[in-house]
Image (tube, rainbow, N blue to C red; front, top):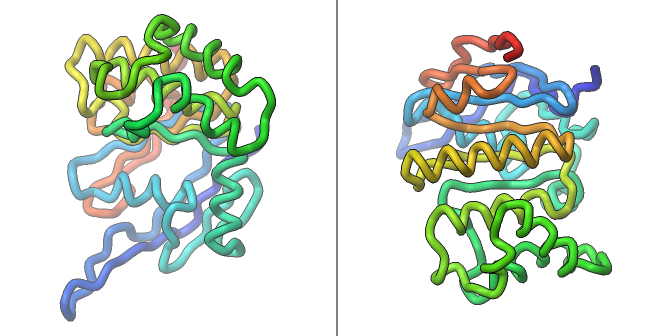
Length: 229
């Protein structure tokens, strides 16, 4: 099985005053193409920092990230951005929709930036899949939190990413709405064959994935494969 993500001896620290704060210390793991994978741990364990390093949003102090066969340390900021636009989808806890654009426009923007024809038609098809075709011309402020996250889901899949990073995707949602969003996320992911990496403190959500990596205090406690259900 081809590894879409390989992380080797990753270390990340920040300087606070004259002290060094180690956020991640010697993290190594790999993720197979098409797998579902979760990163769990308490607040401050380094989960979001690790996701940012894996996605090329930040650079490690040492170690290496191979993403889609490319060593991120060899890329400059523009090249990392190009790789993200081409290969990666993102879902964030706070939705990150553009407030001045409609749901349809929010979903179609990534395709339009890549110069794809039929961006609106593709975006509308994805909005149908997440049950929001009738809300396509509403602005984010006119949508509930659950509806905004469904728009974000549609946007994340619109450019057919090879790997999707979801950072606490249900963190701002009530339990019932969060469960619906999670079901949509896994359904869309299965249909697209995308690799899914979820950062979460929710163990119930993590157990829906095939692998769980546990962090505590910036160190990796375990990396376990779960039995197929």
